[in-house]
Image 1: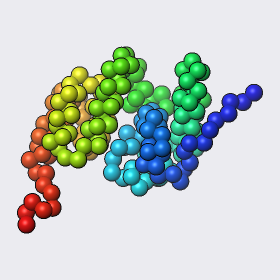
Image 2 (image 1 turned 180 degrees about the horizontal axis):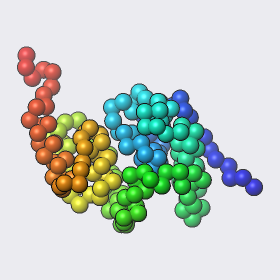
Image 3 (image 1 turned 120 degrees about the vertical axis):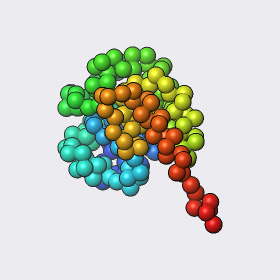
Image 4 (image 1 turned 90 degrees about the horizontal axis):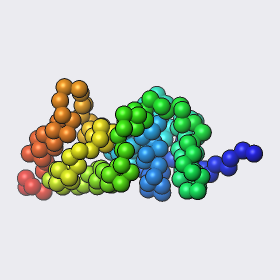
Length: 181
């Protein structure tokens, strides 16, 4: 007896539409290796276009997202893995999980909520305020924030401090159109 999988995502669906209808799809997309789901192009880019940019098989990603969301809907399933979970074992999210990131579900959920607040912030002053509450965030969260800011993190230092200093730098140059009239 084959498992019934609901259709939540299709290749021609804009990423933003999927995330607005099903915010929990954010994690499924990250697990597939799409770290850019929060970047500005996600507002207009389809899942198929994002897969092409990231070199991912669109059918595998769609299948994974649909299975993940179906499993989340089935809360009583005992946490079964989506059918294609093994295909994305090398994603940032999976590697972070393997080293113990997110061992506290409450802390992980809090950090994810703060990350979403950070991504939704309208200016750098707000982002800095939110980010200051995120000290201790795991590498997965910090990597997602770095990707959203288009900066590279390396092994040479403290990722939190690297992002924080970049936020301070960008705040200095942030203006609005009406400021210089």
